[in-house]
Structures are given as C-alpha cells and as structure tokens.
Image 1 (spheres, rainbow, N blue to C red):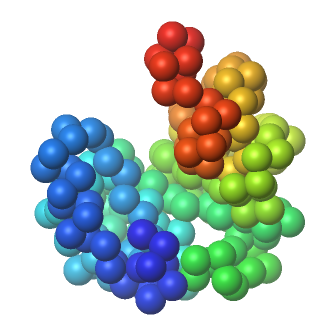
Image 2: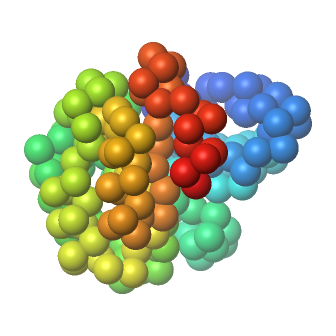
Amino acid sequence: DLDGAKEKRIINHKTLEKLAAKSGLKIDFGGGVRSEDDLRIAFECGAMQVTVGSAAVSHKTEFLEWLEKYGAEKIILGADARDNKIAISGWEEKTEKEITEFIIEYREEGIEYVICTDIGKDGMLEGPSFDLYDKILKTNPDIKLIASGGITTLDDIIKLSEKNLDGAIIGKAIYEGKIKLSELMKVF
C-alpha cells in the first residue's frame, strides 16, 4: 500500500479485502502500518502476514508488542535499504540504521521473516542485490529472507533460490514480459 506508506496509515484495505475474498491467495500486506488498528484492519481484510518497516524503526516498543501478540509467523520485518541504510516512510526518509545491524537486533527479539528491498534496484530491471543478500544471510543465517528489487530474469530467480532465500518479489519484470508466469511455474 504505497499510498498508505506515504500517508502513514492503511489506505487501500478495501483492495486487500477484494483480493483476499476472490483470489484465495496467501497475502502479505504492507505499507502504512503504524498502529494496532492498522494491523487489525489488515488481518480482518484477509492478510495472512503483514510487513512492518517504518514502525519497527520509529515505534520499536509497539512493534515488539505486535510481534508477541500476533507471532513471528504473521509479522514480517520490512528492511528497505538505500546504500545499506534503512529507509522508511515510503522510502522518502533514510535513517542511519545499518541494515544487517537492524536485522540482527530484531532477530534477537524473535523476528523470523524479513523482506529486504534494495531501493536503488527496485523497478530498474538491472538485477537483484546478490551481495546485499549474501551479507544479510552471513550475519543472519537462519532468517527467512525475501528478496525484492531489481529481479529481471528467470536466471536471477534461480540464482536467488540457490542462496536458500525464503522467497522473492517480482514486479516490473512480469509487467514488462521479461519473466512469464508460465516459465516460473515450470521451474518452481
């Protein structure tokens, strides 16, 4: 919910509700989750998991309460980065938090899932940040890491799967026909 990320509250929950009701997909929802009410809305509208990034930086106490209440299988840590530093508020604000330290800090608190988007790669179709994911996995070998940003080819996805990532987010490459869903289904 990019609108929600910028507005600092969930905006597109009705879209989530429609997708969940009609698709039967396991949905991870993110963007604009800043309060307990936002989490409740996302789960009530059909999200199976919710990604929280900005609130993990700016409201750590509340984030840890949500993690305890909903469980590590339901809360995904959003670790969006630019130049190895965490970015928040729809990527508009760069922090001084180094990405691996940020993930280690939350791993020690019980987080299991992390979505890492390299902002400089997102939507650029120039390939993913293999080095960044290697760095994260070296310091957090048991984390369930989901790669995001720059994925362009089926070969990128195969290389990412060889790193034992938990998943990958593919957007623009599908929209632009560089990766076909039928090809993905044959490989995975």
